Image (tube, rainbow, N blue to C red; front, side):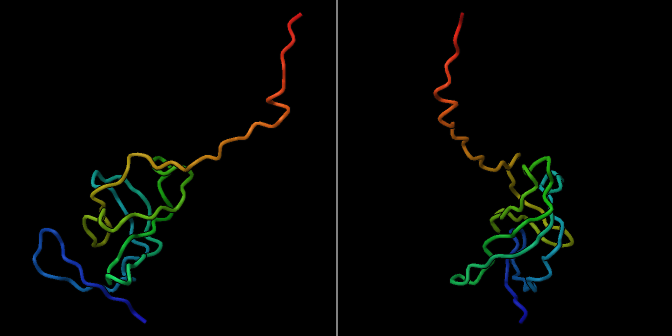
Length: 114
């Protein structure tokens, strides 16, 4: 089954129909030309029958901590052709770190001064 969707470019008035799978593996860049990663998957809002976000993989370690995959809202996409250009992407994406819980030994440790 092939999935198609219609989209309208901001600067154009015509509506284009594209096969969604054509987005897969496209390189993704910021507006400033910084490499972000490649499109791995596409998420849809089935109620509104539109693309909701793109899953980016092989992310750039200089802007994505741990090179984890990130989901980018489709509203951040500026243009799509041979590459995807984003109109917005944070300067740095960090992952949440678990707070290290102190063990009982660490909290009850007392320094003795002679």
